[in-house]
Image (tube, rainbow, N blue to C red; front, side, top):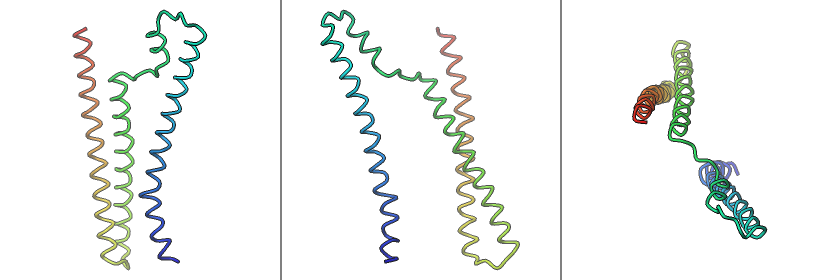
Length: 149
């Protein structure tokens, strides 16, 4: 029974959960599209002399974020995950140091945690560097586009 549960948990996490998430996202997009279609069809049925159909469709479409807004959203994600991973790396470093000083732990455990510590710290620093360089490049692009206009 325990072997079955040990197999079931990774399958549920790695296979079933991503499939359900994708299905939910696609279902929500489909429902939004169907709702907009119903509204447009109802407007056409009630008033068949709609002169500005293109304007109506533009009004019904969800607003598209600008390039700057998309990039800022990505940069804020980089900042958030970079901070989390860096702090995780520092916390693991403290745990590894405490385990090494106190002794009584297998060297394999300490090495495994040390590798995990280094990986999370390095990836966090990489994300933070990407955030700061991306922010710098975005500000540069915005200034250049303002000068052109």
